[in-house]
Image (cartoon, rainbow, N blue to C red; front, side, top):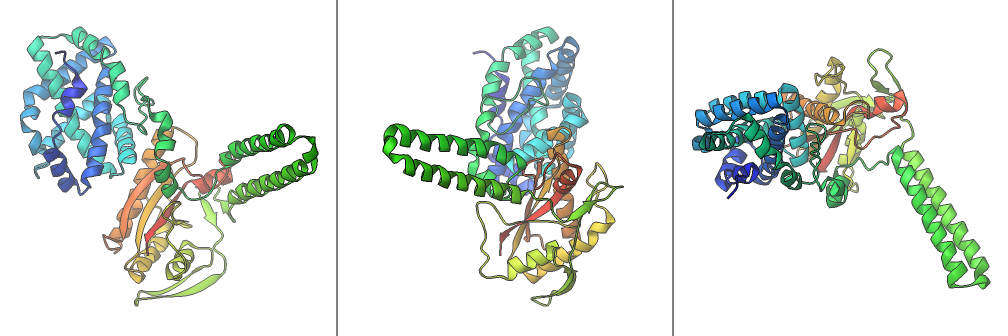
Length: 433
């Protein structure tokens, strides 16, 4: 039977190993399993990509022989035993395979794909890489293969690997020709997930597809009356067209309203969007959590109104998203600006005032630059906010997670500097009251 690297790697990931990783990382078993389903083809894809050149193939052989001689295959159960030495060695091999830059991007992609923390994705990659390389090293040793032999072996497995990449994980920007066959159906297959995680606001692109669709419907109505009911139905046809035309204008108006620029301005130095806070309002928080004096347009005021209103229900489809109006980061990184601390401290008080409420943080960017890098950056920013909230005193169960969406779900038009500034943001989703 011919040697298949991916299939052999799958055989190493037992249910027991998934369970150990889940406990060690503080993630759900389903999240770990989903992450691994994306990690294994990613690792194999990276090896195939690297071995596509003569020099790269020789590097792959050296790395695989090193992994085999280190004995990772015989100690796979010890990666998550509490001793981090194996994971540290794995990180070294991972860096040798991809380089630190691609490692960070891949961790962000896996975290975004599976819903686990970025740090957990890195740990799982540091476990998988030496195991996959160890398998290849064992086969190379057993068959006495050279770099060219390994390159030929891996090249023959590329087409099969393409079919193994799960939908929703696009590796094309990391490795040439590794987008996977099912990524084109991701939006449909994850429709509920997308709806739940969206801001509930239409982007400017929504108008581009919706209006043509309505025009097609309009043409359908016309065809029905012309060819289905005959010329005697001219009045009905006119009424139908008028009605549909009115509805088209209403929907288009709703989309336009949804992307109307929020009151505020762009900081000429930092490029951040500064919201107009509005007049001051005083909030007496319940459960002796304290008193807030904030702007009426602030995140705090909007959250308080939603959480204290018994008639305001949790939207399990679109989510209940509130943009942070005063959380900013140092340019190009995930380090919070000191001006953000006031609003984050207020957020801590809100979590204490509503102890049964649960929140999830989302990070976003504009659409400039590489989308994969943007997703990774937005993930780090969302995680930085969560870490700061916990450091400031938020209970661990109040925050259910953090996710970076990159340029997805813009709230303003990316064609303008003002719109881009608004889209570079962090938002909080109320998951439970």
